Image (cartoon, rainbow, N blue to C red; front, side, top):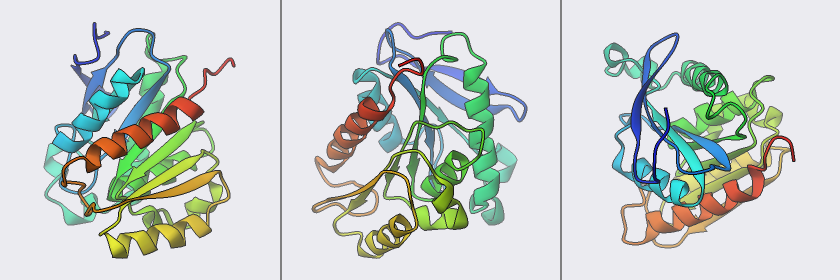
Length: 218
């Protein structure tokens, strides 16, 4: 295990469901960020891989993984099964803590779209011990009653042109008791495809994780 520089990633399989992932570890990472993708996306998501590379440059290890098995990806019921996705995210979290190079690192979640709902449900779990959550264009409302149990500081990033999702984020944030912040990126739509907008997401996420992924012994 291990990556020699910020640009190198390696394929991993995560038991017990053999979830496929891409793990990147630079030199002396400050924490691990696990990605929860939105519907129809996975470990090869170009946008999340761009964010992950930026986070590695900022000193984080990253794990991008498919929360669904290949035979599940065409099932709409599975794609929007937030409890299932959250349980898979927890599997990856427990797996990471068993790895020699990752086990002592504080862990954060980066959730996109429906993946943000799954990340918040997983973060609310009693034994998750998640240090921070960042949501990009997320649907935190899908976390439902779990929102009030989230203890991890949570940053919600939404595009300024994604008006319906802005309102959903505001409503979800009102139900949260943890440290929380909503940042609206001007001129960005739901997928942050406009020039420069994804770079802003990366900078915001890196700052949030750098602040909150303090070493476990600190």
